[in-house]
Image (cartoon, rainbow, N blue to C red; front, side):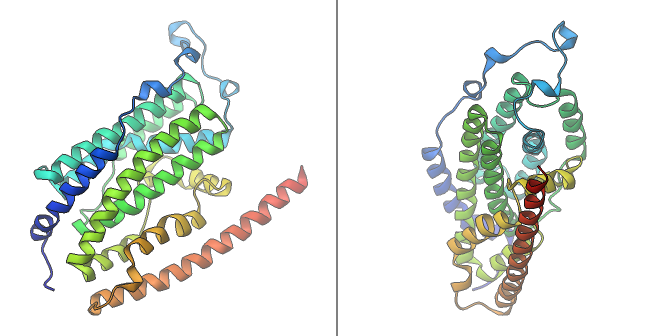
Length: 309
């Protein structure tokens, strides 16, 4: 099968994009951000004669506040993500329709999470706004990834974001917040399915190049929140709490998609595809070892902390 250039590949995938756009529009349920915010709990801040924020006002733990801030600031960078996905997919046809629909749906996530956090005084609004400015000034740059790499990356990233939102909601132990983030994670799952299906179609059109792209994105995967202020420290705290860690990344993000695509069952690959698949297998073996070691260290650390109480 000849290698397709980007223009030819987009043309071949157009019908798949349209089919999955229609499937998505039929599956996605309309929801209103304002219906998930307890507005009656709101009150003015200091500059309007009200009360300045204080940590004691928050009903979630400091770690839950960190996770909520990371999730929101990641969503805040939507203008950069829109620029990158429009560059890859264009504005025309079903591709362009999806770009704008996806952006509109993602926009609700930042709106509803911010409204909830400010109304309930869950986080420091001054620190949140300063970090929003820093995050958006840094922007997000995908590095002009080829189309197949973009499709692979967003498949993994949407699933990872879904899990992070879902687990953050549970960790807050606040039923209202959990309901809100469950709603957001449902959107992220629908987005993942859209991209996952495009990868499936691409594996049929250009299997060797698609497997090469999947391997590249698994090996080099980074969440878009990597540019957030203090991200490494905050991500480590979230990993310790089990909100998002290597075990989840390996077991609940990478492998479900690889199994869906039947990556290790595809036959007839050329040297490019086979080499990439072997590289992927080796990386996953090492990642599993790292995940197990992390899990053991975390269990030991938590046991020591419990013993000191």
